[in-house]
Image 1 (cartoon, rainbow, N blue to C red):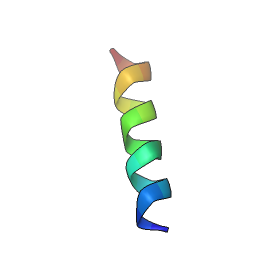
Image 2 (cartoon, rainbow, N blue to C red):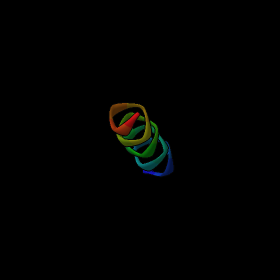
Image 3 (cartoon, rainbow, N blue to C red):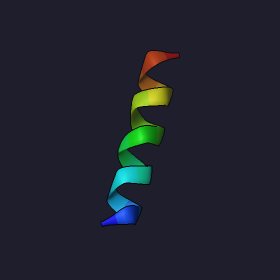
Image 4 (spheres, rainbow, N blue to C red):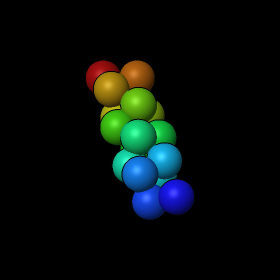
Length: 17
């Protein structure tokens, strides 16, 4: 589940930028 959280964070960060 840790991998999913990291992917979500990355996606959110990229989407914000």
